[in-house]
Image (tube, rainbow over all chains, first blue to last red; front, top):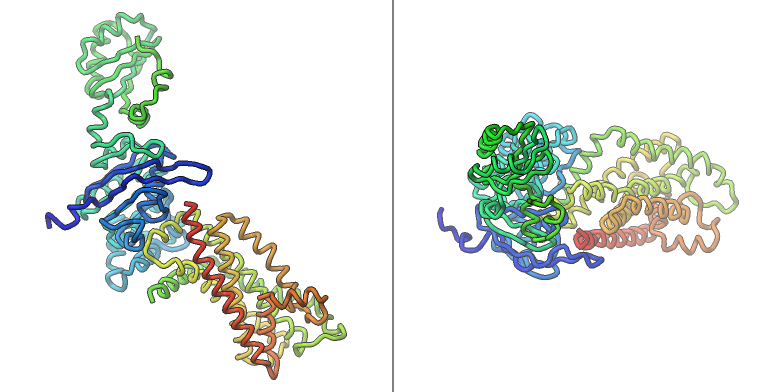
Length: 329
Length: 258
């Protein structure tokens, strides 16, 4: 089935979306992007950047003041009722009925999307099994753990086999294990079901793991867009921080590191040595042996991946980053 | 057709949730008995006031008032469930789905109607046990239930409209605090209007609560005036429809604010 008709138009297209709320709050200031069918597109940004407002407009919950958008080729402003049939939506809050069982939640959602009889029962059983909820299917959702509720929540967004799924910060509040579970599930959905997913997140790692393309949102605008690799290539690599046994003078420690490949911007601040590495993990042994050779004792070493702050601040181009940081010598 | 099916699925959701909370079920059943007992005792001597007319006994007179008051007391809280749904994100889930907005309101008010029917049957049963005669028979009692259900539709719709527009529990509590009791006392629920001051009589003429009381009470006496009953039922039906339509329109206001 290569070359279906909707490969020609994007699964999601947003153009110049503007949304203002009462009190002159500009939530969206001309957001535009397009998402290829069958891929995961990530909207990355801090709280309040406009990610959720974008999702609300694309899912027909809210109307833009300006701009246009299509989902699965359908105009969201002119035909919201047609859009609602082909989308699934999983919001920031876990939206399950706590007084209904897992099965009842899924059945209601399926019925509201027009599924009936054995088709509905089959689909509900399939999802319960798939999300590991079969044993809990007849318990009211109030008794579920947070991770189970989130799984049920995602399953409810999928009952009617939507063409486009919106996931608004789906892993917020989940423990690491449940988060990893959900990531695996989301990745599988595009691979096997050909689903298009719009994912919003404020975790860089999440966007990195899942999204084929990313847009960084800041103050209602998109400030950078590309594949995770492209965006990360713009950053100067991982941060390495070494705590030394004693205060060193600049010369010995930093000149020891000068010979380590892929390491730059080494600075010393009292007993703390900082540097940036193209590949943090592989640079650590080299850094440690170089310091040992130079006779500098080490207490601890940490490597940090580029954080959302790094990406975000870089692309918003705000100067205060340099002012608040220690001066590099 | 789909709107009707959707409404019934929503009604099923609410009714099932209620039945799973035994404490609520007990409260729902006990409360009208308490009203009947307390008011029956408190206002017993009303029948001795010169000029008292209507009903074979005060119990017969009181029963429609208690059913109507119960209709308001329970349905006025209906919006609380809507606020819960909004807070849980369930409302947004429903709204991004293809179901008719009206089903979200109709589903709730029909649920209120069903629990009211059960409550009314209990009140009627207890009344009979206590010696009420219910001269209008099952048909008359059916009219009382119908009038009360229509009133409950109106109140539940109003409660949901407020919940969707203001999205605060306080607003729903407000409608109960400031409407239910005054509207009850500005009607013939406990005392014939002929014994009330002129301004209350005037107010009562435009008070839907009083329409329900009048229709229900008239249907329960022998030789009922059916033209009065039908006119009151029609008026209640119109009010209920307007309120439900307003509540459905309140989704637009809700969606503007999200």
